[in-house]
Image (cartoon, rainbow, N blue to C red; front, side, top):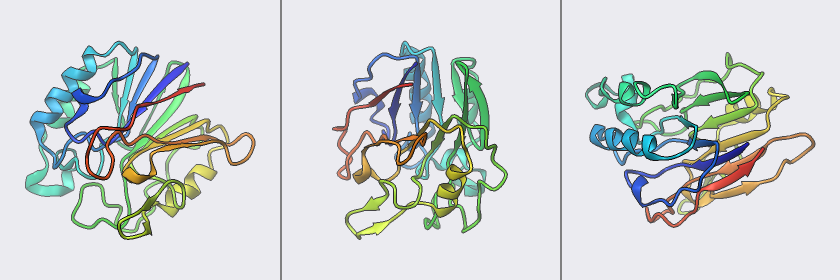
Length: 216
């Protein structure tokens, strides 16, 4: 199975050259600041791509999907993606079997009060399923392609790292969020997962990073 991974397109999705594959994953930050018209265009763009399945999680910029954001939440956003089933799989703390693989998707990030899907210091993965084979999150796990270079800090989640370690069948973990962390980490131990930071934009918000292609 060929899986094509991207993330953090921030409204510039149509500037990304997307290679063909079986499953397309987008790991969040579809918009710049939750603009619902961007979500609509993104949903149309997804349907135009040839991949049999598209898996999407929202990110911390995607306020329109987070009901806790008050006036920034827009109840039109999620249906724009979900009405395009069965090809588009919008996963917000949800699992789904896709093309024979068990996927789980979640948007939560730590240390970002005032943004969408701020975890508020809670373990948002304590009840997540552990039979997952492909994990899609917006944020990275702690100390894994999570270093934000401007301030020199690590932005990953310890709760997410602990959850990942509870998933013995995990083959692939795709995330974004930290633009400087773009790239692939091989399994750290057999049979550990391939880890992909799939940010399409660099820190200057330029669409210079190619989608990452993984063959499982």
